[in-house]
Length: 389
Ligand SMILES: Cc1cc2nc3c(=O)[nH]c(=O)nc-3n(C[C@H](O)[C@H](O)[C@H](O)COP(=O)(O)OP(=O)(O)OC[C@H]3O[C@@H](n4cnc5c(N)ncnc54)[C@H](O)[C@@H]3O)c2cc1C
Image 1: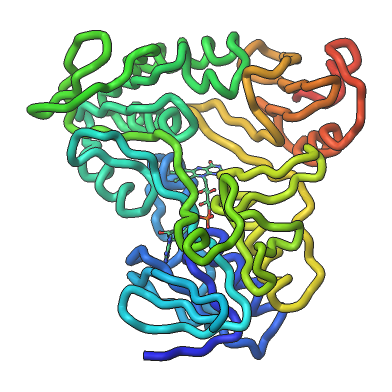
Image 2: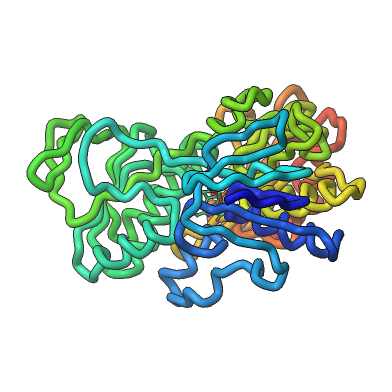
């Protein structure tokens, strides 16, 4: 079948759904379609690894796309973009002619080269599978000590599972947090009953057990892997769009083709405050970029010009963060209560490049302003810049 729409969105995730809502608001008469390869309507991903394990309220995760009146084609994968003809082909053999196209395809979890049945945690279906397996007393192995691995391990432990965490680094989230904080979080997980094994990786799997780099074997009822994602750029690449660690877009979320936009985890955008192009995997970025892309597609001047923030919850610890959290940078720590409440500033060449607000709330705007300042900053003039309470 052939379809024609003013606006076509590939990817019915967080950015795609935000774009559909913004498009409808900006252009009440426009025809809009969204193609999503998952079987479910658009939903929020962050609750999959935290809130749903606390309150189980699945009804809260669905995003408000229905009221846009957009055609939403689920279980439908876009397989090719013909830029000259302004046509997208899907895996059902249908074609979709567009005036403006948004690519919001997110990312795909990195996979291990061995083992079957592992849960590479990304989707609502992954959540459902883990929910089935994660009965109290179940042995859950979590591979990966980054954001997803640490959230899943905490949620599993809070649900009465016997959790073992494996990762190559020295401590949980060691690539993002300063060493003392990462060590403290690792100790906290152990206090909560998690068997944390830093410096240990999985090398293979056989007979329901993982073979580990320290020579031991680990029996598990479920294996969850959080190894990061790679952006889904294949469609864009095949269509000849400029791709460099994500689809390269300008501040109006426009790709190297003026009729094609990109937003969310798949987009590499200019971050003026950092003076470089970045690609992030955060809810705030996905939703705001989606919203701005929708408005720009509808003809508005709506640049994406803010630095995104992200957040996480680990047991009863929580934080928000802005900018670059790279433990290799110089860090200045300002604690009200060590490793429980405070602020960490990440510095590079006298400028603040990132701020971690550890159990410290309502400071995201101030952190953004600080990152935009030219400095120079050091430990003396930074401490106390943001109220750590
Ligand atoms: C478990 C989990 C917890 C998270 N927690 C946090 C958090 O606490 N804080 C935070 O800031 N961020 C968090 N994130 C990250 C955040 O959810 C992502 O940044 C956000 O979902 C990105 O939105 P997106 O629309 O770019 O991609 P997605 O939401 O992944 O949506 C992309 C959609 O496009 C589909 N798709 C891909 N290719 C095609 C195609 N060819 N045709 C049709 N459809 C296609 C995909 O299947 C997917 O449904 C979390 C992510 C996960 C997985």
